[in-house]
Image (cartoon, rainbow over all chains, first blue to last red; front, side, top):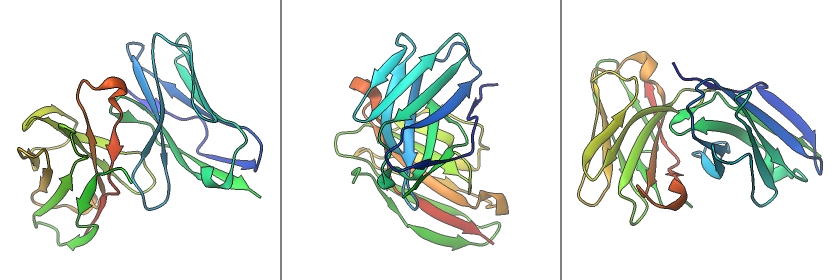
Length: 106
Length: 114
C-alpha cells in the first residue's frame, strides 16, 4: 500500500541556520503533497504544498523540492527561528508520514 | 486561529462505551475530514464528508461513524471503545474544489479510554 515516511525522526539546528527536512513516498502515482507544522497541543498547520507537475515551490522562508525520479521531497526552512520548533509532517493528500521533530537551538 | 473548533477538548471513557466528538468547520467550508493521531505518530485519515455524504474512508472499522449537518458541522461517533482508541482526534475543514485545497485543522479532542 501507500506509505509516506521521513528519513530523520529528529533534527536539531542552530538559530539562524537553514533546516532541511526530508520525506520519501512509495506511490509513483502520487500527485499532490503537503507539508504541515504541528506545535505542541495544536492541530497540524498547512505550510506549503506542491503538485507533481512542479519540481520546486517557494513560500515565505520555506521551499519545497520534489524529485519524482527517486520519490523524494524536502522542506527547506531558511534562517530557522525558535518559533519554527515543532513536528513537521509531509503528506500525500490524506496520507501523513510519521513526522520529524525540529528543535531550534539558541 | 483556523476557524475550526472541536469539542470536547479532553475526555475519558471506559472500554466498551460510546463517544461523540463534535466539529464546527471554518465558515464557508463544505468538506470535513476526521483524523486519528496516536501519541508520537502522524494523523491517520478516518473519513471525509462532503455536503452531508461520506466521501472517502480510511482503514477504520464500522464502529467509527460520522455525520455532517446542513451547516457543515460534523460529528465523529465511536462505538464499543477499545483501549487503542485512545488518541487525539482531529477535524479538518476545506472547500472542495477550492484553489489550493488548503485544509484547516482544529486543535483536536483528546480521548483516553481506560
